[in-house]
Length: 81
Image (cartoon, rainbow, N blue to C red; front, side, top):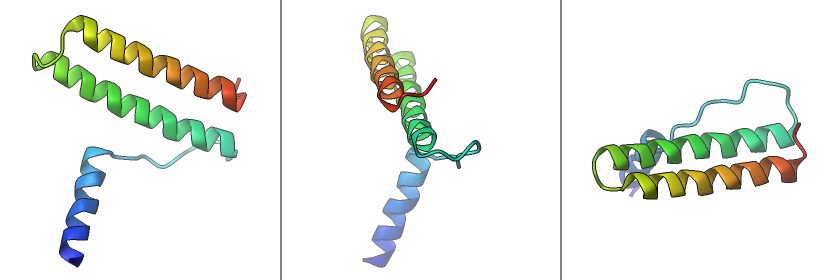
């Protein structure tokens, strides 16, 4: 069971890499950085799906636009300038 858990952890690290936060430590900035990294990873997947022919250009655009609006709302809710 321990090997299975380690494999899942390694797979998660591979699929969802995270970089440490480098900047002024403020909880809002750290949280926004996490959302920004998630946005970046999702856009990367959408671009890969579109390039591979699994998504149309229009659908990829709609999904990225939706993610952008979510990120913008997060920024506004955290009151980051």
